[in-house]
Length: 265
Image (tube, rainbow, N blue to C red):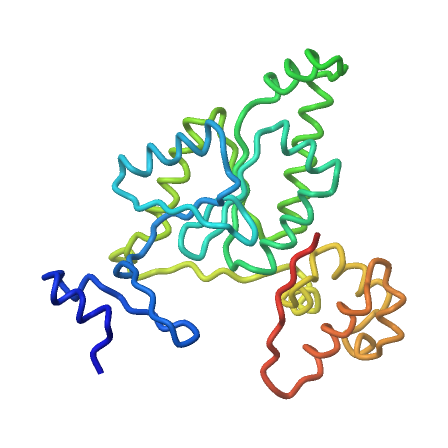
């Protein structure tokens, strides 16, 4: 049956191919034709980096849309990007917010990136203006240590750019690389977790289990078999009831296990 919206479109001589009718709770809503969006930006994202990304994306012919994102600042299809200045990186690391963000990206996206922009020198200058005593060597060591921890504990790719302009260019180039057709060689990289311990590899496939937690589980339980007992898992430092139940469900289920994604607050 022809809907009222389509009838109206015909009367007004509007091309009905450009009209999409959505039925929600029995009511019609008129909208535009669905178009693939190249870059989604979180509605809370503001500042010079965001403005620069929008300009460079437009110049590259990429479509941009603002949307409230569950986690991350920018979305390139199914790839998530969290962007931080050096100062933001330090502050969020100290407060613990950075690690919650990485946990959430790890739980919700197969591919996620941390884009850091700025310099240690600029960070020190701002810190000194705020009355803080920070030496270059101390700040540099903390930066390297933070990045090392991120790459060791999460399947996250970290990129460092010296300024906002290059960070924006990186986002556009990353989109083009991620959506580039396969090369003529036909080879495509397959991402997988790999360590020198197959037991650890197995544990790292379970959402919520990072490198450190997997090591704690192996040290405490000794074997995968021992992890099938809830009491053994409860003895692992940092292991909550929900995560313990998830581990047992994954390791013992004979059916496909669907993990409900939850955000850490």
